[in-house]
Amino acid sequence: MARHQGTTIAFAMDAARRIVYSVLDLTGPPTKGEVDAAYWSDNPAELAFPRELAEVGYAVVGATAMPTVKRGGAEAAPGEQPAEEEVDPHLSTTGRLTADAPFQVVSDGTYVVVLRQSVGAGDAGAVHKLTGAVRPGRRRARTTYWTPTARRCRWSVTPCCATGSCWWTAS
Image 1 (cartoon, rainbow, N blue to C red):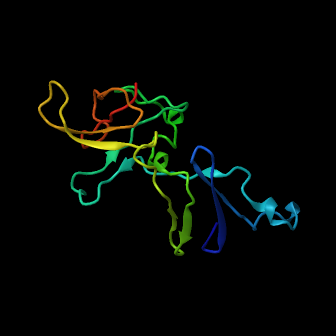
Image 2: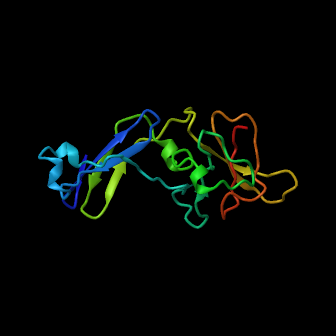
Image 3: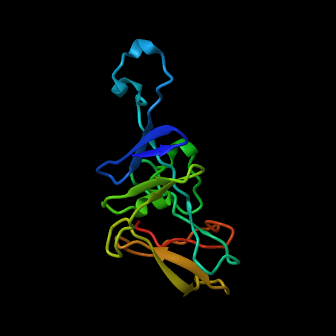
């Protein structure tokens, strides 16, 4: 729980390691009663995380996009660009790297900051960077990633992001 600019915000993590939040809105109609439990959001919102990873010290290279995962857990096929409502907002972002561990939320009055622990290298949701991989028939090296559950490499027909990165994925 955190207090930000006079508003109380509660955070929680579910069994799938998704972090959700709810805002206490005491400005609502007084017909809800005097108990503050009636003034929390009806449906907690899922906390949004970035869809890219940036390496410290490599700002010139740019960030690398996380793999796109459709709702239900299936990864998008190479070259496939699913509609936004088909994309899993947790597995397609760095949110998938959140460990099942306590997290902290702080506010400096301007920003709300969530401090969380990342998953270990052997976790099924982890991604690992492989460097210097060259796709057959190509001259330049690409940055590739793999997950511990990967069985073989699957290359994208088009780059996943502007840096020409792709992912090692289960298929």
